[in-house]
Length: 405
Ligand code: SAH
Ligand code: TMP
Ligand code: ZN
Image 1 (cartoon, rainbow, N blue to C red):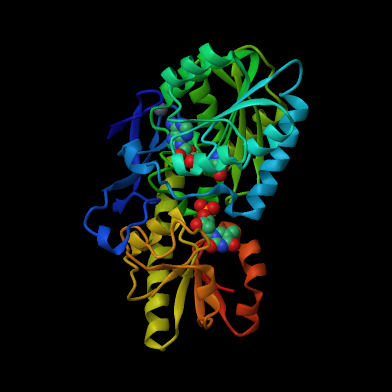
Image 2: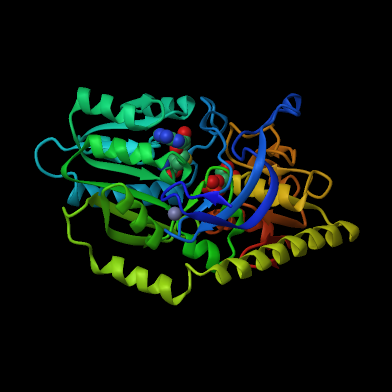
């Protein structure tokens, strides 16, 4: 049993995906053999309820300068962050010269809206190539990891931040004590630290097991974030569920005692209690469903191959690293995966080494079946590729169960 990174309590492992690669590093064929692997396993802290990984992958392995993920590749996410920015501009970024800091700004998807409103801002992200996209557009970015020392430097040179925002990043940071210490040092009195991440309730309820990969070190719930905030002198004061990335929760935290928690916090805590989200049995049955989905997916692919059908993959997501490596699906079953991200094209999927081709390869000619690894963008992708289905093609999904549409 390992020790909880939040409270030091005992963590009981409930699923072991075995040897897995870093999920967002796409090797060129000549890089095979140099990839970094680790044991991907998740457990549940019986004291503070935080779900977390047993092994930490070093941040330099996960977020190198050429980290290929680009947030702005999805129209849905661009729209989402425009909305979040509008909301923040109306509620938190008010008064004289509010300063906005964003942890994990990537290519500036959210920063651009804040900048356009004339707000003083600073993004922090170690992914230099992605950060360059943001700065080329005119946003200010500090290239580096946010931690206590970075926060203190920013505070010294720029003054306190009214809002510290972060999307899909806080759950990636195992050394979260340093993040909260930094937030404590940088946040103006009365300011808020708002972050959104994949929601554990959705992962468990819909068997979204592929949301478990190296970067998602923590899988947050309302209860565990409330406990975490308390450990670090903060308080969870608001939550909002948003339907992106298969289910996301936005958490608003403030220094303890500064704001009154909204009704939504109590409502979500009650909902989690009712659905037994913090009970060990919930994780045992989740584990059984994961094993079933993986077995069924593998046998479906083998059966289609035996029938002579052509199957390809769609979306070289981080999620697909967990699926292909755990189910041992390689180029023998899926000859290529298409992806619109230039940085991933002509490379291989991590660990499973399936070639990645540009989106145009999909219709050249259409396959019989396509495994939709980017299921969180299903609507956008299915609309873009409507000809595929019209011409008799079928999508294979493996969550919440294995099915064809
Ligand atoms: N916020 C964007 C990007 C999410 S990807 C979105 O929601 O789409 C996660 C980003 O966090 C990556 O760009 C990665 O480089 C960055 N990151 C990882 N650890 C970080 C840290 N300690 N401080 C700041 N950024 C970090
Ligand atoms: P994500 O699930 O981490 O957001 O990654 C989605 C991946 O899917 C990313 O590599 C880009 C790719 N993608 C396409 O190839 N076509 C699309 O239309 C969309 C929306 C995403
Ligand atoms: Zn704990």
